[in-house]
Image (tube, helix red, strand yellow):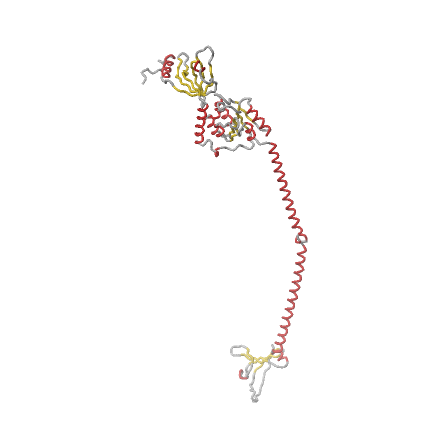
Length: 427
């Protein structure tokens, strides 16, 4: 716990006190090893001190570094802006100006082997996280509404992409943002440009293009922050960095990897000549298919029309009508023959009935006598024993009937009995 009294508006600390306390705390940090990228070198002849600006490659943070000028000049490889270095330094607070810097006593350049080893470790890390997986890559639109291009100012990559894309599709719309493509300022500028284009609703695909270069020149495109920003972008990203052998980590994270900027222009927009030829080809194929279908249907209709049922549609009806008339006439004759036969049979039966019936017999002078039985029904008189004297009789003759009364009964044995009948009215 500090024994210093707390400050207040009535008892403030002077600036020198605050500066001294800050300096005390900073001086307690001791010496540290710091890695960064050199963004500025100021080593003027005749001076004893060199001034460097050291920047964090993954963040927009930088610090000033001072060192003896001989320390810079004695390096095996001359120190240049953009180089990666490891500095052994002690944080120093300048009391008079109130500034913080690092006082270096050793400087080591990070070699190519170390850089490649770090890139390989980062490659394995990103691959393990799934940033290289094919299933997360988004398809590139067939004909983008707008194309964002991030590249160096007036660079050959910019000319290649614009010229080849416009030659393939003259109406293509580009939104170009020029940034540094190597050195310490490359990653922050590319990140800002990427964020701007990703938020633009008129941009359907973003191209990061750069020409070839050394491993150190292409280091920004293997930066972890840039790779993660590309993976998190909502717009499809096309990587067109360097030449065919160059494969920075951005190529694995991007949705489409192109070997060169020229190849990128061929992959992001279609060729109007090829598409026009394809349209003409498809139109010709459609025309031939339609003509073939029409010809086939025409032949089918001709075949249908040439069939007898369609060539002479009333002929079969007429023939069927004649058949119907023939069968109807046959049916009529058969029916008349059957009726004539039946009529003949009926006439014969009638003749037999007439000949055998009582009417014919009565027509020859015979009569049929009937009497009323006990139930009141008329019965044919067949024997004299069926009636008694005084019985009421009905005598039927050929043309009518006579009512009579039996006065006496005479048997056929020859006994004579006086008979007297009373003749009644004919019905």
